[in-house]
Image 1 (cartoon, helix red, strand yellow):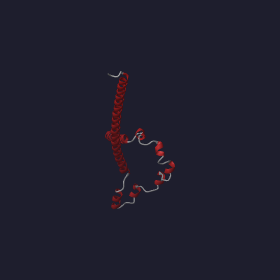
Image 2 (cartoon, rainbow, N blue to C red):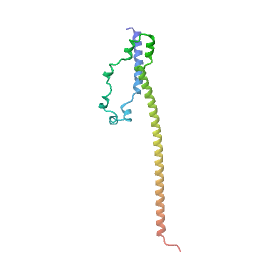
Image 3 (cartoon, rainbow, N blue to C red):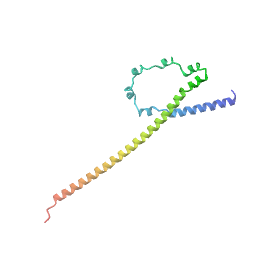
Image 4 (cartoon, rainbow, N blue to C red):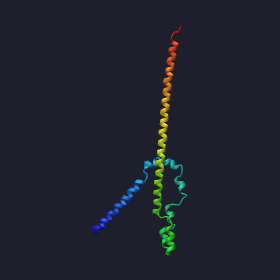
Length: 155
């Protein structure tokens, strides 16, 4: 390979790596997923036995793919017709858009929950202050009543 070809290939690989890094950053980690559902939570929805009723990857391979159908679409109209159907890339992009939207909604919910929790803490603190003030007042009254009861009657 020529140095220019190698340089172009390296640039191409760097771009691919940058794209993969971006995709990796958008993927949920185990810790992210733990906030939503545990393995036990998911077992309540569907077990392996429940999923056996659906087609397997091997069974789906028997059906025609877009690439298979392209061989039959020799006329321009048919090729244009095939363009209407989603490709894997279209589905991947839609998944990424959905994930970004979900992340935004999730972050907004977290912010709202933080606000509610903050308000709750403020309310609890105010109630604690009021209880403390009431206790102090009750002790003062008890002390005053004890003093009045212990002093001799005035003439």
